[in-house]
Image (cartoon, rainbow, N blue to C red; front, side, top):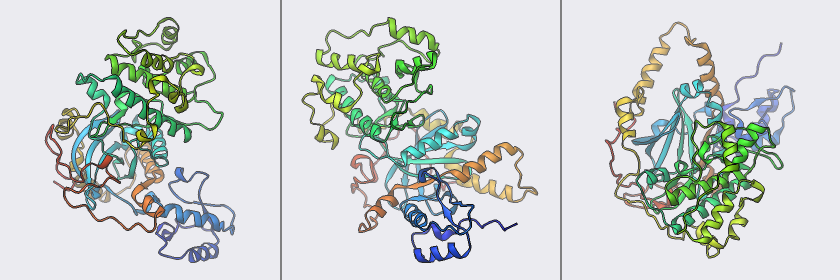
Length: 480
């Protein structure tokens, strides 16, 4: 039996420190050829072809260029780690992940870091969703999205480093009893329309548009986040899975689940925009729907209950809300072109809006951090594995593991899952990707204190802003 090939040569992952000609010669001489699976974004390693001497040199060339552009093999270690960031404070949490403000040590740029426990993701069967979200975020970038900058992992967690938006989410501002004007809501609708139009061009349905997932920057512009349950559909396909947050889910999602219909498409996100806009204007949603409601009752509700509009609202705005909240998706406003034809949006300067030149009606208070202060207390007091003690904890775990007689975990299934995550997780570096797309661009020096770097910070925020405290500040990751 022929010997198994070694692991993929490390020189395939370096930034062309060896010439491509040498790569070709080596791969041919050893009798093995390496190629990617169909989708680069889904690969965590290079795969050996079973046939002996098919070199596939074009794929090798594409592979070298691709990984040089920032999609770096997770197991090679050529990328960022937790130690490249200083942890400042916790600002939010999800069902199986938490968010904190971080500063990249070399550039002093500020980001939001979402970290997800591998063990909790396995126990809740959420690993697939995390990988799908990473796959989507690595391929998209838009002015009204919360964009991914880096992804990496360690033994405990998976990390996503994204744009830092300090204005808080719309749910927080609703809870603070902010009264949103028609003009303010119109801007949010338009900015979400541009975001959804872009996502449609990428064949993506978000499926969870709601105030909780719309973050404001310091100037008050809206950005869509959380692609955890988003899906990609090809031309002509329709989604069928029951996914979303019930009060914001379109009727056709429930109908497809209950009656076995033909599924749904991009129109569902526009329904969610309508629900969100109504809630921002009135303080509650157009339909009284709760997470515990039965699917059958919800299908019945949409056919029997009519939405009530406030008489003082402008007729043009109500007309657009009616079109967004049309039960039949075929008659619903569901494209940017449809929006541009709405009388309420007739005077919108779409080009200026896409460049954030339209001034928002609501600007978050820059003197405070718009989050729940209990997030920080939970991280510091209640969290069993707090982030700021990670470095010491991992070192202790590695020392303990190396002293064991057997490398096998007590829980073989859990260890197998952890090994699979370690194997398949794809590291991403948008900074390196941008640099490779513009070879003439030199690495930017770390900004001086007080300088503004609008390229990588959310909407030109200060490189080292003085963060208002709504809880104690976390020590850095290197602290004991």
